[in-house]
Image (tube, rainbow over all chains, first blue to last red):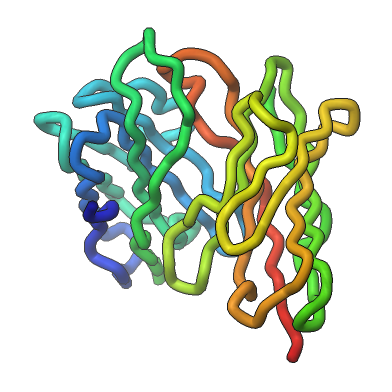
Length: 119
Length: 117
């Protein structure tokens, strides 16, 4: 089966510009996650979708970050305007669970990530 | 609140030597625990997971980890290191239970493993 796809793989922008990242999860995976991985740290969850609804966006800086998952498949993450501290790798992951009554295994499959450099 | 502590940001071993990467967790509910590996410029790949079945978990590439509740640890081991094991390893915890936000992973800061010939 095809893995999680992300694009672009690399992006360099100047501060105050905007940028968007795209993610296509594994077919049939209802849950989609966006993580931010700053150099030297572990990934940190930004937002979790279940189908096209947001489950958790408590750590998303909503003044500049936004995300959507129209039709419950592909997702985009946008930053506007970007700051220097947004330089990081943005990882998308997907997993199988599809409902609150589902006992989940929490196995998440990660894409290769988008490396963002803000200058 | 859940948290993960990985002791040692960098571990170096000789090829053929034992690999031991340490992970301690904090969780107020029975945890699910994971080890992921990340090769340069790639995403994370699941090595193994503990989900309240056997406490000794075997994963891919010869790695295994043991869940010790009394020590709140989930250390990763491999009897004999190979050059291809050089990568960064992340321990992660999530809450057990049913769907929704319990699926969220909390990651440690990672341990970079170097393997010397």
